[in-house]
Length: 150
Image (cartoon, rainbow, N blue to C red):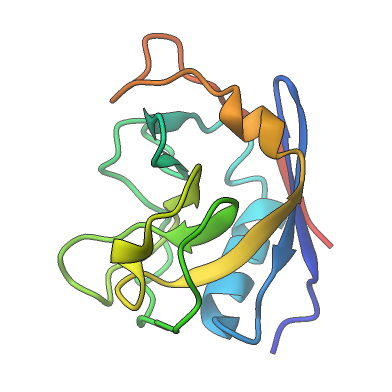
């Protein structure tokens, strides 16, 4: 199990602090923390931001089609609800295809429960997530300036 407890995304508007949930998804927390501390997320944009739903990022291509060079992760689904501030992994139709892309819920998205891996929750700075430019993709997407796990 990982020793990381928090992840900080520094956005252009300020810091977003996320409490990591290794109790729910140890493999996904380890992946997110490793990628963050390797600088993988630094400069990566939020390529899909849907008002009232979620902000998705973590693709180095900025198009929603890429991931890291690491292998895809086995699903770690839980009963944890997808509600405002919850951080979960994006994936293809294959449940075991999560890699580096993630999303942060703006609002309740309970229809995703049990189908996507929850790995954290925003504890501070949700207003900075709310302020991300909207769109699929946004005309001028917001980006992660720096990401670090501690």
